[in-house]
Length: 325
Image (cartoon, rainbow, N blue to C red):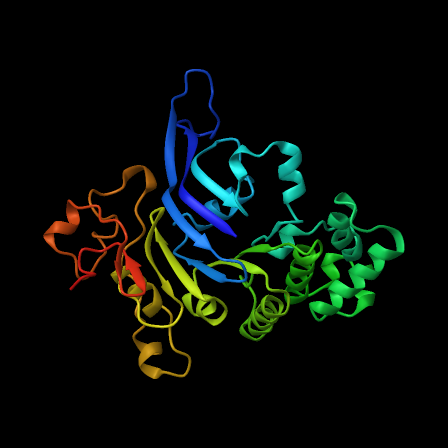
């Protein structure tokens, strides 16, 4: 369904304070994604995890060519066998929403505040000429029902909905044209635990009922493990581990990321939270060897000089010199 073949994304930036390339101003390069290769099968749910700045959202935007003009991309993104980067504009416009759709991070910013919810859900149907008039209205009511909202909500404006309801509207929009692939970028960000659980349950049900492929992005491994079949973990623009959602992680970064979340009701976890020491590296000043080695609690001398690629061990692949041990 989806293949990422050595995907790279580099942002060109100005060295000036304005952030714009002025006359004589030198441009710098920020490598956000560095050679990511992944496959997603039809009907499969794949989770993409990592800290802020690891390159997750850049991957999501690259899949449908939504990156800004300052981005330079490399590699290939094959959507059902077609390279997204070489598609003509007309074909790309037809692919968006109908073959693949995206649920953006933060529904408050993804919805038009001065348009009614029903009109926004119907827009992709009208653009792709899949329905109009009464048929479009009926489809909007059907979609609202699928995401657990009453049909009369089609007359509401975004500010009249709660955060969880707005997120459900975004999911309804993504489902409007019956796509084969949905990309969900942090779909439960800023939601409380109860609403987050409801949205995750909804996503699981929709995948099972419609056989949709899902690429879900989050920094929360527990959220991804609850929905996805496989997990891929990114650090400093690269994949450091790929494997089943169930089972133990093998890369030290994946293990530290999983351990950074407290256990609700566990006094030891509350009194002594297990955070991840240090900060992610500056993409323009990556350390030599493994980019994680300055923060790694089990780093050895070889880690500072060897840039390890993904090594397969059983049903998992991890980019660490200690994977085989």
